Amino acid sequence: MNPIGRTIKNYREHLKMTKEELAQKIRVGTHTIEKYETGEQIPSNQTLLKLSTVLDIPASELKLDQLDKQI
Image (cartoon, rainbow, N blue to C red; front, side, top):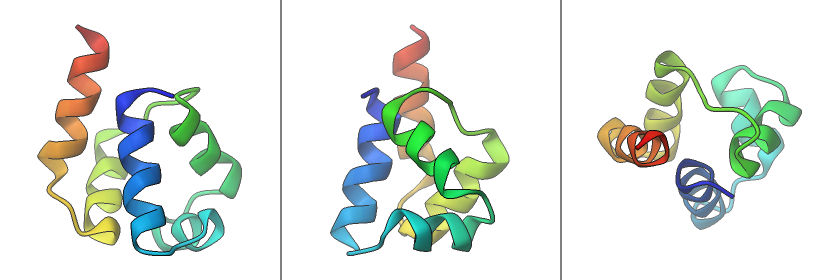
């Protein structure tokens, strides 16, 4: 699991939200959430903003995790 995926999963679980609920709120498929959490896929900037809103965390926290992976 990559840092951004771990962050998404941790905050989702902290909010007691299922993958299905998160997927519905940001308008993607459940399989996409699974890919984000396992690191198979990196969310776009637009999706990162949606995730930050739904998970109630600063977008910069998600973006910093994304930058760490690229370095």
